[in-house]
Image (cartoon, rainbow, N blue to C red):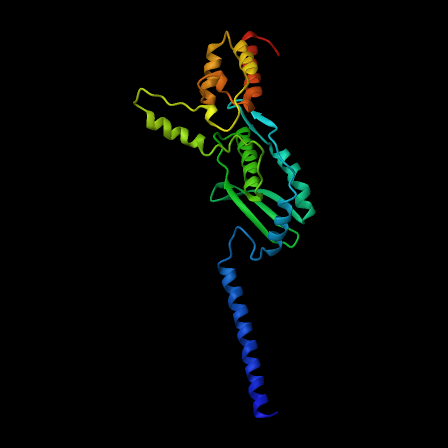
Length: 252
């Protein structure tokens, strides 16, 4: 072997050693600074999610909260809409409840067939310490975490109100101590108010029950029955009739 060949061979050995050291250093850094909310590699799951998001079926509201008259899509309808898209792209979703320092944590993880994953974690804090409150809080949080993690949206989502619900508290505090009580008006929102015919029907149902009518207006933060959003008409009428029937001792 000539002198030049010897030098070339030594340079190749040094280059190979540098690559080996760099690979080991990067692997060590990755193990130290690994994001606990996702796997060390996410290239395959990102590609699969990009395809799956284009295959989600439209999701519409199918349930009504009869206390605040809020429409929403329940957990089952969301899962049914996204499950085929996830399965077709080698994805699955799991939700586990874990304890961490006596805190109940919901871990929602999207898994890829390559073993790559991404996840969210949310604390479960029921209003009361009983199974009904826990189950209700858990199911609601499961729904929200899946939507957040998979970028799922609901058609005509009444909770997507430009932060109006949160701002109501600020406005009430701002108006406290004054003679002007500025109330939320549904007509200023993008949601269509009820028709004249629907308004007349509600007025007829509530004619002898002004307290129920006032409760509905206060709950919805509107000034008149005509201001009620059209999307909540069915729930309002159903709840009002249920309360009236209960007062009159009727079963239906």
